[in-house]
Every structure is written in C-alpha cells, then in structure tokens.
Amino acid sequence: MDDQQSARSAWPDPPSYYIRYTDDNLELLKNAKVMDHFPDEPISNPPVPEFPLQALQPPPPPTDEYTIFDQKWQIDDHLPTLDELGVKQLYPDAPIDRVQELKRLNRSLIVQFLDLLNVLVNNPEEFGNSIENISTIFINMHHILNAYRPHQARETLRLLMENQLAKKREQTAELRAKSKEARRLLEGLE
Image (cartoon, rainbow, N blue to C red):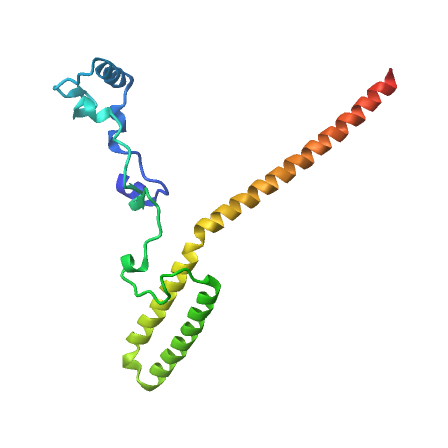
C-alpha cells in the first residue's frame, strides 16, 4: 500500500530517518557538541532502530554537485562548451555576431532539411547522416542561444526593478497628493 501511495504522490515521502529527530535525541546532540565528544555506543529508542549520534548532524554543504528528486545539479552553473558535450562546433571560437551566426545556421538547417527530403525520396536507407547534421546544427543553435541566458536574466531583472521603482514612485506621488489634500481640508476646518 505504501509503495502505491508513494508512486502516486506528487512529492516524495519524508526520509525514513526523520523519526530519529526527537527532542531527547536533539538534546543529546547539543550536549555532545558542547562537550566535543560523541559517545561510541549507538542510540536506541524503542520505535527507532539503533543509530550513532553523529547521524543527527546535517551533512556538509555540497561543493560541486547535489541531487534533488533524482536530478543532479551543479553548484558552479556554467555553460559547457560544445567540445565538452562531444558535439562539433560549427561557428568560430572568436567573438561572433550571434544574430548573423544564428541566421547562417538557420539557412544551413533549411539546406540540410531539403537534403534530408531528397535522401528520403531517392534512397531512404541513408537518412542517418542527414539527421546527424540536422541534430548538430540544432545543438549549435541552442548553444548560441543558451549563451544569452545570463544576459537575458540580467535584463529581465533590470526591467522588473525599473517597473517596481516606477510603481513605487507613482504610489508615493499619489500618497503625497492625498496628504496635501487632507492637509488643505484640515486647514479649512480650523
């Protein structure tokens, strides 16, 4: 029943060792840290299997990668080069005009697609090379676009902050106008 429940759950069940974190066990851990001595004998409370007291300490923070929901994430998030990915780079390493390079790759993609259609009409068994070429072009295009992501994130953040600043200035101006109006009304009552 539990296996079926966890298979249907949108979020995973808590880890099985969460029941170790009782108030008594946490107090023992606190005392052991203060004394800088962890007992050699394992802790044994009736509902929980035996475990060493050091197991209650959190693990050290990750330094290179970590796993969440069976997916590995890198701490140093960088865009791998096409060579690291094992893909042939179709554009020069030197600084490029990305727009022109994307247009060039798009034209190459159209030519390769037409070549694929020609191969499929004339000799359908030899379509693999055309598919590989198209895949390489797509990966190169995606790589150029992914190089824009940090810039896109900065620009999006800048626009968001400018919008927030404009909204706050507008609200401040409205408050000042209402405050002046209220002062005039109060002065008129005197």
